[in-house]
Image (cartoon, rainbow, N blue to C red; front, side):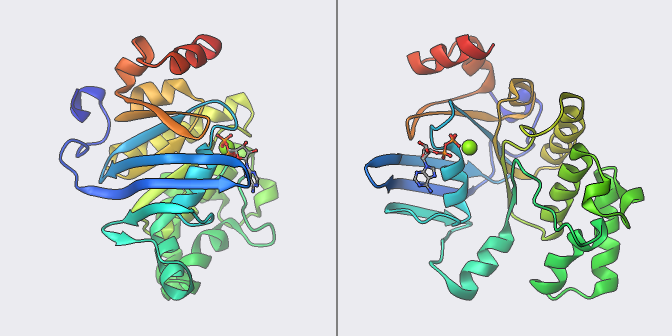
Length: 257
Ligand code: ADP
Ligand code: MG
């Protein structure tokens, strides 16, 4: 199935490899948390990662922006291997936007300051320019009118949309989402997913860990199913949900759907 048929990423079928994991292995002591992970995310592609709790999804995300080290294998971004440390690592991190389950906004900074901090400090953008770009992004995620408020004055859904705007302000090449709606009250989930669907339509390359199967069905170009540290199945959303090939995916889906 082409990306067009799934109605999401415009360039998934043709985009060149952007994030490439090759033979990635990681252990926590005796626990083999990432088992020979081979995964290529193409430019403009939306990959949704699904799997039971403890299967290594967060570790995978954290490895991609090197919040975690890996023991074997390689991860590269846009043709460059992930640097180990130092300035090169900082600039790589700026290319990978990450949105976590908990919003992690700076409590003592305004919404606007939360979004402009990275561009000003890390990218050296002038304040006026950073402010203008931030306001455009806040507009896009529907919280521009809250720009002068502090995070605690916003709902969880609004805070998570700010967290997305903050990540986008760095103009990342890829966005990683690790269960971005899991901490939200049910009525706020859709407003965050809508922002993510919009982002996907604009051609952003995205890796999304989520239990929101509706999002996976509509926005994913590809579903990756993880179990016990391994990628057990990679499939189109259509196939994954109607006819999963692995027993473990069948078992998982039978419990949640
Ligand atoms: P998921 O996001 O799929 O729920 P995680 O990547 O968070 O899974 O965790 C995978 C496994 O690794 C789990 O068994 C978890 O307990 C373990 N784990 C995660 N982080 C650490 C750590 N820092 N030290 C030791 N074990 C960890
Ligand atoms: Mg997790």
